[in-house]
Image 1: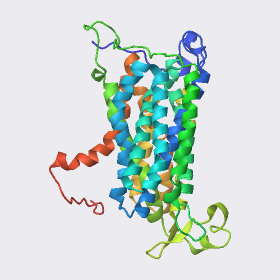
Image 2: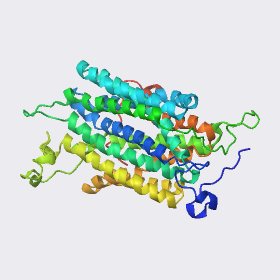
Image 3: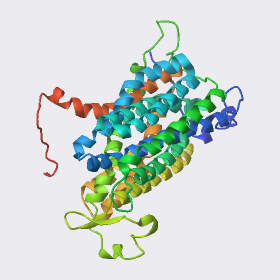
Length: 439
């Protein structure tokens, strides 16, 4: 029979002894705030990498003359890294501990970052995809380990708050990633010729250097190997009382929920630039007036599209993606505060309802109202991944590391489904699905 876990309750109803503990004080009285704030650098790192991935698709569409489906291989390579390394990362986290697993992930990210130097000279799509896959594999280690680690660095009732706070720093990385990607991927020389292909390696080489430095810092940093409380007798040595993590609905439903959430997030993030350059209402000619969009930071934001309509350029869309991630970041920081006052599962439920309503308004093609709704979806999506994660591994003890790997691996199934769909459906060849017809 399943042991009923202790419920996570608002601060006002906590046990008085527990309430006196700070958000970063573990049971033996040690303050682990330094460990936590060191950990948030990892969240910023993979946020920055993911942010650049989301503006890379359009670059390859134009430089290598790919269509939307072909450029989606960038996302596939990214998620393939997660799929291949999620389970090994969970296993190594158990064998090496939190510190060893993090260092292994950092070294893999560094290898992927430096690979972009020769990849730029090879100048073949597969070479760039390999670099993306290696970096994603390294990030898998970091996500599989860092996410559950934040939940144990203090009292359990603050677990969702801590992971959302750390993911807020991840939002800063997401905010800066598109800016860096736009600056290097869509750069032009004085003659107006694109130099993106020659400069694509620069931000990734920079990441490689930073990651090597971080790996050294983590090697010498104090990182207590704290385990989550085992509320379900998962870590017992007795085979009569030991339970599988899959026997607990709150875990396997979290895997499913994470899969569905990341599917929605990937769709919005990946094709944001395409949306802003093709679905936004025509801009007024006054936007091209001197001093408005052709000088300084806004230079090159407005252009005449092939259909004769004035609209946003790729550079503008890349920077607007950062505005979307700013909404995402604001959602994370405010969400961390809200989660200290209200139960995490209720906040998750209401934010999800709001995101669904916004998506319906986007589908309705209401002009600038729909454009505004795109940015608001970033806000309401912000808390979903970390909150689902914290709720999914709640009370799993040492098995939280294994559970973490499955939740992270759920990310990869989004891309995997698309590529194995012909085999699942027995419909091979040029399958077409209409997206224009309605009911």
